[in-house]
Length: 284
Image (cartoon, rainbow, N blue to C red; front, side, top):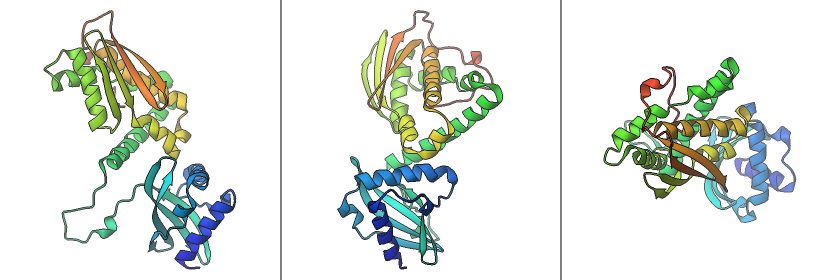
């Protein structure tokens, strides 16, 4: 079977019925269910014209990779489909929407192909959140959920960073402004600052934190959504308290709304020395 025939056979099988589980051979068994879910979505959403395209093809050993653009839902992206070949049989192995074209590099060189800022934000966040969840799960198992949550309370350090890096406004407002800035420029979130005063502030954001949980397969298998959200909220509530705010978080259609009210206790930023010495930063 040629590489072109392999792709056409895959498309025909995909469109005819639910994809056979025995034709999926993932790099890691944890990815089997996410791959099956993706194929189901692809079957339901991809247009016939998309699937009839001739993909860019790359053969590497007993693997063949096909690259082509697909529109799934409202998003169009370039996907790389990977298959492992055994004689005239093929098995679907992986699909990825990020492909770094380092096959185009020839040494000596100091220039390497880049990706979009959006893709790089996604990659950084996926690594960061994966490590955060891995550590949380380990601590929760070894010492209990409350100990695990307390480990990630980094509020005093975060509030101090905001106060020193944004020095020309009052500290409480500096905290909110820094939150907006770092979520946009360091984490790739969509952020709207709707209101800001000494007494109250409102920030509307779409953090990649929740998009990652929805779109990656491994996180859902490592932590339940309620624990995942609780970890997110614990981190931000501790940060807000350290900066002299009381924080309420509401959710609607993929967005978070942070509602800040000046703390009745007042007192400004908490002293970082009050944090436990083993507390680790957990920028969410």
